[in-house]
Image 1 (cartoon, helix red, strand yellow):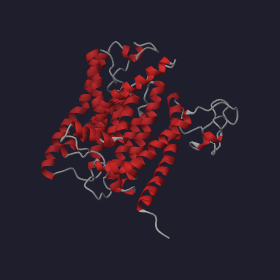
Image 2 (cartoon, rainbow, N blue to C red):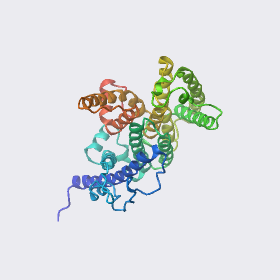
Image 3 (cartoon, rainbow, N blue to C red):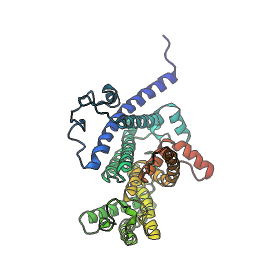
Image 4 (spheres, rainbow, N blue to C red):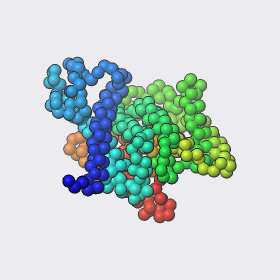
Length: 400
C-alpha cells in the first residue's frame, strides 16, 4: 500500500489542528456570550448556570453545547418556546473561526507559508508546544477584543477588567515563553526590545502600577471623576464643561508614568553598553511591557491633546486599555499601526451604516470596536500589511 503524499499529511494534520482550534474557539465564544450578557448588568459570569431568561428553565448540558446546542433546541427554549437570539450561535461561530484561522495561519496551509515569506513564521518554526504560551496569549486577546467590542457596542462602556486581565495573561505568557527553547534567533513573535527599550518599559510599568495604587487608594482623583454632577443622564459625555481641567489632571497622571520610563530608558542604555543585548529569557517580557506602554500611551496622548485643543473629551479611557492590552499581546507595532488603521475601518463601517439607515435601520458605534477590528485585521492579514509597508517605505519596513 502506497503511503500518502507529504502534502496530504501536512495539510491534513493542519486541518485537524484547525478543527480542534475551532472547537476551542466555539467554547470560548459560548463563554463570551455569558460575559456580554451578564457583565454589563453586574451579574456573576459563573453562577447561576445558563438558563432561559423568560421561564428560568435550566439548560441541560447537551442543550448548552457550543454551536450544535442552538440547532438541537431549534433556536427556541424547550420550556416556554421563546425564541433564542441567533447572536449566541453567530458569536460562537465567529470566535471559533478566528481561533481556527489563527491556527491555520500559524502552523499549516498556504497562510503559514505566506507568513514565512513575509518573515513572520515564528509559530511554524517553533512548533505547537514550544509556542504554546504565546498562542494562548494571542487567543485570549482575540477573545477579549471580541467581548470588549460586543459590550461597547451594546452599552457604550468598556469593562476595564477585561483588557486588564488580558494584559496580565500576556505578561505571564511572555515570561514563560522566555524560558522555552527556540531553534531560531527570535525568542518570541513580538518585535524585539533593546536594552534601553526594556529599561523604559520597566520604568513605565513601575510608574503605571504606582499611578494605579494612588488612584485606588484615593490619593489622586481620576480624570472626569465628577462628570455625573454636570452631565444629566442620557446626555453626551462630551458635553462635560470642565474637560480641559480634567485633561490637565490626566497630564499630571501621565507624568507619573513617563518620568520613570525616561529614567529607566537611560539606565537600560547604560547597562546595554556593558552587557550587550537584552537577555533572551527577558526579551519577550520586555517586548510585551513595551507594547503595553506604546499602545496605551498613544491613545492616552491623543486623548489629552485632543481634549485640551477642543475642550471636549477626545476619546474614552477604555480605548486606552484596548490598545494597551493589544500591545502587550502582539507587540508595539500592532497597536501603533492599528491606531492609524482604525479611522479607515470606521469610515467603511459608517458607509455601511449609512446604507442600512436608508432602509430604516440606523446604528452608531463607539470607537472601541473600530480599534479592536483594526487590531484583528493587522493580526490576521499582517503579511499583506507588511508587504504594503515595504512598497510604501522601501528599506524601512522589514516586518517585526
